[in-house]
Image (cartoon, rainbow, N blue to C red; front, side, top):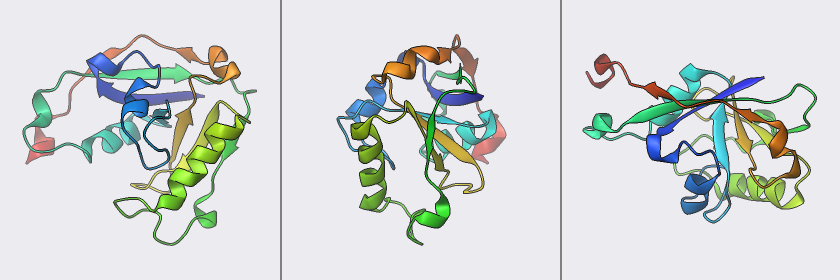
Length: 151
């Protein structure tokens, strides 16, 4: 399975450092997590919703990764989440779910529904998990949003 992320060029190392420095919907600050999406389009939306006007001059890259089909992936279903799980800021229960996944280390990957498009999936990757070495990270490629996105 191919997964995607969009990030500033300086965070293209895929080591979880960006996640460690800032908490996210599914994890608390201090936990090294890499957020990816099942499509490049979803990765673009996930990044775009966090942009402010004027942020378009940031140098962005896409980073894709191949997750082997036989790698264990722990999954969270939207039907098992509280009704307000898509709100911003995210309910604390989501960080507890992600923190539990990270601490139990049952898998290197956690599949979660996207708060933007719940029918699509985001994949959290633990770069410290023993199975992380089985995930092949591809070379970063330049990415730019179409200027019409800011109309």
